[in-house]
Image (cartoon, rainbow, N blue to C red; front, side, top):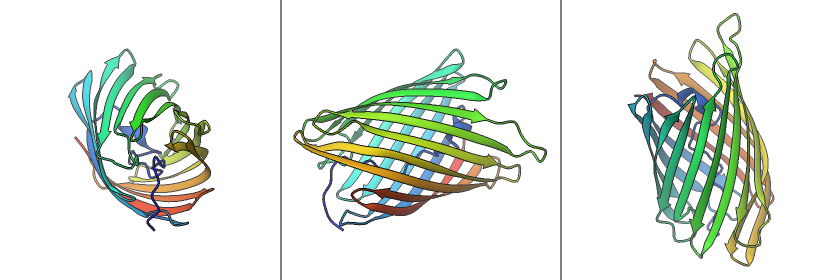
Length: 261
């Protein structure tokens, strides 16, 4: 599978989607390896991701992500940033760059976001983020993303449910349609350390191969995951990827280990 494509949304998220809210205020390092098979002549993908958050003090944390992908091209992406406590929320700023020549990852990406914790009385967390990405070939895109997270009260056995709703829109600089993503995630967290969840999503991956060569690719996605807390600071995460799109089918899995700092 060697067909070259540019700016395809990398659907295997390195972030712990489904239970990411658990570690927003804590430091961690997470290492993930994944492998994805694509149909219709598109390139299969293997990747390694290192995601981390280092707490400097109660008000400041440093963010660092490193991703290495083997796909249409071998590409390495690096992201650095920080988040800052402001009231009951955290403002974050991130800069990402890569060595991509084909546009499979942005040359530069700028992200600004804010995450607001409404407190234990409501169990709600609100997150909004805007980013701008610049790709090879003078192609740019601007995205707006929002997320709602709800922690439900524990049941009699101590287990509790986390629900997430996430949406995003993406506007490319060329003639592609307005891209969008909608997803719902449910995670059951148990006192035994075993957590089980799944994400379902729909959307349209819209990007430009060149300023006058748009690609619009609608998709549906199902992403089950399970994790186990080996200790108070260590968690192992297994995640599946099942995506049916207009242009291809995607099947894959990833295995990660997260260590709290």
